[in-house]
Length: 312
Image (cartoon, rainbow, N blue to C red; front, top):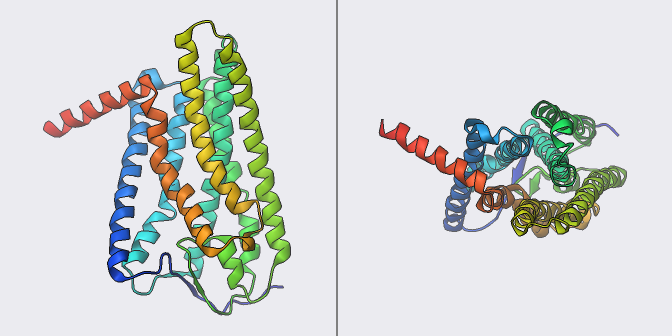
């Protein structure tokens, strides 16, 4: 059924509470937002400036950090604005643009994480063939493919959602235009569309998750055969960091999008969405850099360069 919407804007209540608490939340999330931009931005700059890091592994890490910067910018600025706003409105068009970019970025992440796992598998399990199979040129092509594929997934589903009649109410207790709350505001139920979204999400999430799991299993087997204790520690550190990021991201999106969207209470939706859209981008730079000597060295050099340029 295609209907003309009478709703021209949506009201995103985010976290309904007193004005004082709203200001406190604004300060907390603004600080988190700045730290996320700084942490991921530092990794991107360090990889760009340090020639030693111009390898597929660090090119993928830099792209992942760039993705995290783009990802939080689809949700956090509007959430911060809502904390200080009296109306807390978002236009119909802006809402669906946010929907599109938020899910395209999220899908890009589900494609980029398996690519990073595959790169680790080649580096550890096929070290002699690694320079031949995975070079910087091929790596950039695969990264571009991840972005393009993800951004082509959602125009048609979002078009169908926009054709649903939204005739009021237009208020949702969420901070982002998520499909669950949006479908709940439609004047007619769309169980078929919800089921289709659930199946599509399950295919993307489970196929990429099991690919990562298989790659890490093969890496673990190879690591246990390494005679050098230092070599084992380095491999475990690299794979362990990636598994930590995968666990944080996939654990939260599985809670949200594998079960039908209407089955999750609003409070759980907000908390889980907040976790994978705002908290994990803040934590990821720490996970990837704290146990990586090359990255710590590059970040140290970047910090020194920044200080010297400021002193001039």
